[in-house]
Amino acid sequence: MASESATVVSNTGNLMKYMNLDQRGRVQAEYVWIDSNGGTRSKTKTLFKPVTSVDELPEWNFDGSSTNQAPGDNSDVYLRPVAYYPDPFRQGDNILVLCETWDADGSPNKFNYRHDANRLMEAHASEGFWFGLEQEYTLLGTDGWPYGWPRGGFPGAQGPYYCGVGTGKVYCRDIVEAHYRACLYAGINISGINAEVMPSQWEYQVGPCPGIDMGDHLWMSRFLLHRVAEEFGVRISFDPKPIKGEWNGAGLHSNVSTNATRADGGMKVIEAVMKKFEARHVEHIAVYGEGNEERLTGRHETGSIDKFSYGVADRGGSIRIPRQCAKDGKGYFEDRRPASNADPYQITGIIVETMCGGI
Image (cartoon, rainbow, N blue to C red; front, side):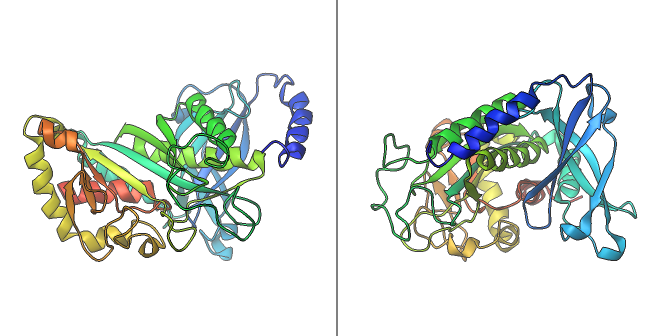
């Protein structure tokens, strides 16, 4: 990608002269929130000293009419910090601040899915929920076509690309590595990466994380991915079926365990839970991402969107139970239905609700 990003690299070199200037004790805090379209937005606030607790971060606001989160005649939406992370771009004492969105009347904004998910997590904290999410995504050129593919054409059929190594098999490894390191610097619980089945498609895994931390870490990792790709002039797509036809889609496979599933006899608990998931299949699909019907076709390592199924080591089912878990008689299960663009708060929230009941 060196030739296509030469201009960006040159500009970055000029920028570093200023990034190395003394901030004179001030701190730049990048406030990040989720918008109405399942994307991230951010803006920067100057603080007068380093932060040691999220409680020290002030509430802020933004123009919700410009993000489709509020009407123009009542446009103020408030940002309430819920977590913060070291900033890998500005470094030093500078931070990234993850925020919930709240309306002026004191109620959570209608696109604030974290609020209800957190209430569920707190109500059922004794269950010991752990989550691990596998975020698939596709790297696109500025023309919207997968990066490295022939202009308006297609590469060879799927086969050599999954976990591939070498020119013509993988694309944009520099972006993937940069994002990985940025997540590690920020304290995101990223646990691995791999090239995916479709060329120019990658996956990274976040977790295991307890409760609401899963959604927080996953959303901040998405922000970092877009921010890193911006510096390379490449677009990130979370479309669950970016290329129609005989190409794998992109999912957000969600791994789940509790104290009970991890304990001896946990397989019986998992099997009992499957009946609950089957009964609420339609409700889960409703919050598992836009355009998922293009992906969940029963082909390309997916189950059918119209039917719930599960099995041991079955990647064509709605839920897969790892073979090792079946052998050990305990462990976790993988919900393979969520699309790559699904909201992690909604995913984890409805899983807790289905397994434990509402509040």
